[in-house]
Image (cartoon, rainbow, N blue to C red):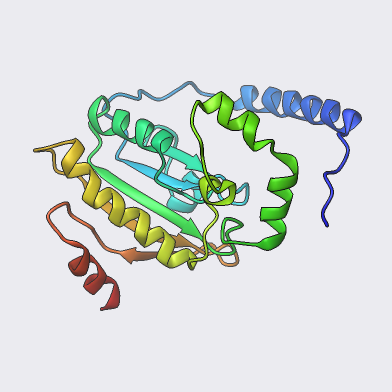
Length: 206
């Protein structure tokens, strides 16, 4: 049975001190913010895993892409909210869903148990104003491979976006980032909105 570690007051203070020192170093070499409107090439939906450096792994600079991150690079109401703003207000037309190797959101009995112990589901449901059912599933834990999960999220967007943005052409791609060697593998070259599910699947199989 897992236990939640005690809160480290001293460690928290040291973290903030480290962050502020790091910000001072950043300010010393900061050259200003790039223009946002019209400069971003695409939207990247990827995992919140701290081992993933989105800009570096894509060879991009700040301002060249919008980045949406959550646990498991999942299409959720909140990630969709951010995505729609990028696609409409900021006029991006390309979406790249990036999964990664050794993702912690693949179902794990230990992780599920730790979450269940730490979270008061009734309090959470009261805050949300709705029942969430199975907590593990609501959080996004799943039992699919990282490749299949990234593809499934790209396919979901490929089917959803034409319905919520009729008449707007958006390209959706899926890729997998390898934490061991830094390689980005394209899983689906493209999932255009006019493609149905079996065509997207056929592309992956080729």
